[in-house]
Image 1 (cartoon, rainbow, N blue to C red):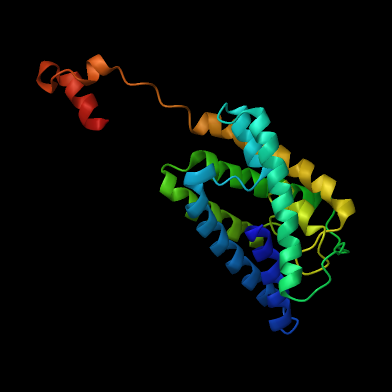
Image 2: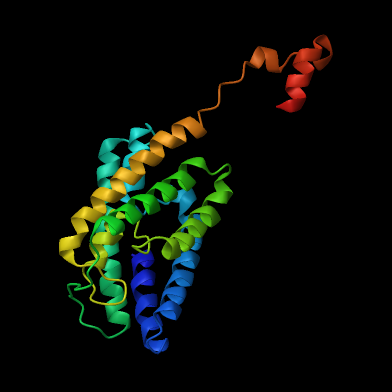
Length: 227
């Protein structure tokens, strides 16, 4: 809810203050999104894994880290929360609560952009070396993808649905939502395949070897020092 309210609300504020300069509006929208992403992931990562995205939840299920029933519950909650965020943003800016977007976002270039944006997002999530790196890596990727992708990086099926409910700077026509979501899941699955090659699971340590005194074997000593 808070993520979507920030994306939509900052878009409304940016458009009102930018004097028609779309580059300035997008820059302001990007900055707000990057900030809220980093803050929310740092805050809620220890609670729930900071799943704000059905594509992330599905990939975690495919990795065996989240049960499918839990993934479904996450996805429903994510969609409801994102839609509530759209209503919250409208209420804060005294806009009609219920809207449908007329912002056209369609075509092969947009779909490719969404696949790339989601691919990179999932790669950051699956490959970050330390838990404390996740907030800045994910936020940095989304900030960059706002600018180098043709779609401005939705990269989230739930927020894509919610953004169809706002006829503001951040919106997307409801008819364009389905293709975006398909592209996002294709990008997510591609990221999972690449991550399995780049970041294979670490092998379990043989405790008997690990506890052997270093002086008994120079080879073991070198391995221990390099470990």
